[in-house]
Length: 344
Image (cartoon, rainbow, N blue to C red; front, side, top):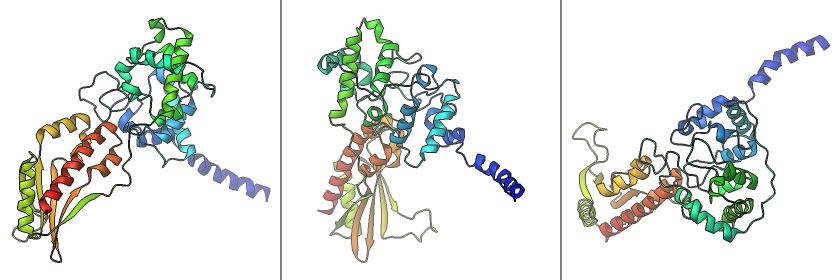
């Protein structure tokens, strides 16, 4: 019997080993699209920089993956288990072969008012007013930036939940080689000055974060029209021109999907665009192309005519980019007003 049990355990052992998460594969599947195959960077920051990876704790990396960065493109990976996240962190450690730092969880005591003055003098040019982060947030790879590596958002709840005070202080003291972040020793700051800065940054937790989630928004904006489908289309065209948008074309919704001459004459899509707005939005994040150029659908069903457009605010919840959310809000207003004008 003992022999049979031993054989059974030997047969099971390879399965147990293979069942453990593969950190490299998980990183490539979930992280490499932004951070590069081996953490060299891309649209996301370079994680394999020794000055970064050797200066952070495993706890910081685990929480960053788990919580993400709301409003800064980095999503929260709630789909990964704790073991899978740990495997990713362990794989990242192989890049330099060094263990992660360990930091105390105790808060550093300082004068946040004095720290705020130092922040506005020394940090604001990179990290933005109130620590909102560097300009150019989002998918800006190969696009103009105001620095080689976009400064992170320091008032971000994901960052503040992940970073220990001692970690923030050490970053200020040592800087980050390979990035624009220099050692604050070069400014002649005292240890108390550094503590004041850390206290000011930690104080962001008590204030509101400007990024708003639009998860509860409906996927479309829809209004009913009291006019015929032909009249409604003409109303939409007039409203488009009235909004200083260029009308591109009107076509049957299923044009090209059915044999010519058999298109549905009760469903149309209207394309239009404002190229100044388009260029401005694309400079923030090319994913805005999901709803640009603009499109409005006019459909007649059961004798009732409806005007429908994508809801840009719903897309804002997918983009996770607070700068792009502002463009989405503007586009939501335009769509809503356009649909209302066309149905009056």
